[in-house]
Image (cartoon, rainbow, N blue to C red):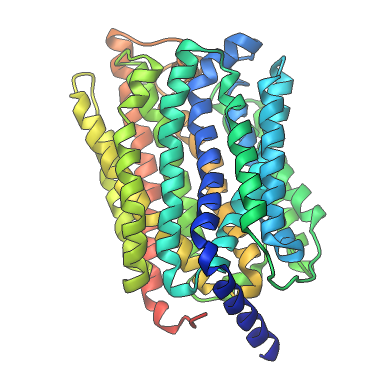
Length: 489
């Protein structure tokens, strides 16, 4: 108890010392989120040019997106732990540097293997940035103000997504695709310089051990399952797919056995004993599973059956991101006053409505309805993220901010990694899988009966995603019984 009190006192002292620099510090954290968000949407728009420029196979081009997310997923808890051990600010700055170097390497890629490898390096840097950013915010702000802080952080994500769409469209249309990576270099270097001047990490260093065996088994297990699901979206079920799936599931079981016997496991199962922590993490997982593929599916609908260009299709989604960025701080402030459960649950419910609208798009639907659905989805997502992040960090002991932030990122990313593969698998049930992928990367569109059939497949995918979102909402709502017993930090 004395040690915990000392930790809390140190955290409070840290709050007061950083009070006058919070604005700049928050700006640096938002820049980290912004730059990673830009890299998510901007790469989606550039996939056709990357495929043509580097002669990347149609079935492999998706790994330019998934490989990046998979690495962040695997490393999130480990680099969060490194933040607790060596300083969250220091690890955040290291992440920025690695991300910038990865971006530079991606811009210089020369073939399929190089772009995927360099995107993995980018993902390593992204893991350091995203896993430690939540812990830094928890250290900058006391519990009663963290919801609003996470709301401001969501501005970085929404603004980054918008900039990714707009800048990506301009670059792909008028410049080389390599500039989508070049632009990260000056932004990242500027953020590093400001971070070094603003941050002064005096939080207590904790002794931890890394869990390389757990990381390897989880990584190989997730890769095996993900490879099987992704291949199933492009090729018929066969021995190879079943082998990868079986080996992946077996390795995930081995991972579970290893983690039960580790002194400091990669996934600290004891954290699930903290009230509200389990439903918060699982809500993040199912929300990621339900929401990440929406951007891809809507763009497939607009580029395929509706015949829009990538930039015109993406611009229809910009209003949703803009409104979402405005809603984030307001939603976070409500979470501070009323608690995180209701804002998070209502946000998930709002996203269910958006998915319902998407599930009823047809070949004659007015395009303004797509914009409306995007607005609704943006409002829902921006209501959920700050409230749920605040719930996780409020429930976490101060000494475990890094681990908790990393686990939140891990659960959300596991959902995101599988979201696209599951959605494309369902959506491609009515046409050939290769044609579905070609529509996604923007190299073809559809007309006549084939467009009608494919739209029907998209409806099924949106209904599946809607079911995942409903599960997330129920998990979020289940916290209402335990919030009153959650100790204040």
